[in-house]
Length: 403
Ligand SMILES: O=C(O)C(=O)C[C@H](O)[C@H](O)CO
Ligand SMILES: [Mg+2]
Image (cartoon, rainbow, N blue to C red; front, side, top):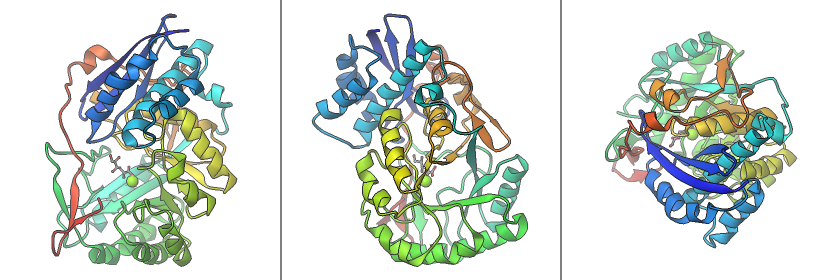
């Protein structure tokens, strides 16, 4: 089965998405997500200028060889642009292979290991009581796991504190907006948030929290320790993970489970963290970590050390990523949880999909392939709009801080 054509489709049905569509001489097509929030056109150009010409005429069934060809063949390895581009090709090829077999993708990976995929939703509030209301709303909607983020008294804007609906959009401006930050204020506030939520909600639901790379290792240790009575499912991105050793320090101080990896692109970014059992959940997902082919390698390494998966699933990952991730999730033996931020109606219409939500779980569906398509005519009605993630500055002196 030869690849006859591959196209990059950039659209913005409420937010920007980059999608690769591969066509074959047997009439089968597949799609893959290539969205890199705030740097979308870099991946689009990498694909259309450098990758697509190398795909034409290749055997669409040779997924592994094409992966190696794009990874080793580029000479310049790793990095979010390269790995998102490779991921898009890989996802589209797995889609095609499963369609050719007439099977849902999870069957090619080894079949189902569970009945459904437990997801967590985002409860965001401007203050503790507002976040609590949102948490209760998610619990009412059937979610078994809920991430809670709250505005911090004395700080004007804080990441994760959004529009207070089921939808949350992390990118919001033609140029990056600026948020202010104080680790001291945040550290005083956050244990109170979880104390209040547990007081009202009890302990039946899983609670999660995203620190968003903002603390030093010792501050993260302090927060993890303070949160122990509230039994979090995880504390995410407690400190920037470029320095994998930093997690040793956090581990020495707390038993709160640690999750990391949404900004990782390869197994090399998490190898030390996993092998030294410095984390409990690995957050890498299909689009930014080289597709199903590479994510599977990360998960297999993680399984050796009882580290479980917790794939990133914010709205800037398209339904094509979510569809593929769900097939991966329902198969992967060391599954932990899947993040689920709902896409808008416009996005769902551009990407018709077979997955669905019920009772706190997502189900990938039985359609051959990964079950997600793109309506190109509709996509063309939503042209690209430049948008950025915010940046973060320390409140007291304006120093640029991790976001
Ligand atoms: O979903 C999360 O955990 C995030 O941290 C969301 C990220 O900020 C977002 O996907 C960045 O593009
Ligand atoms: Mg995160």
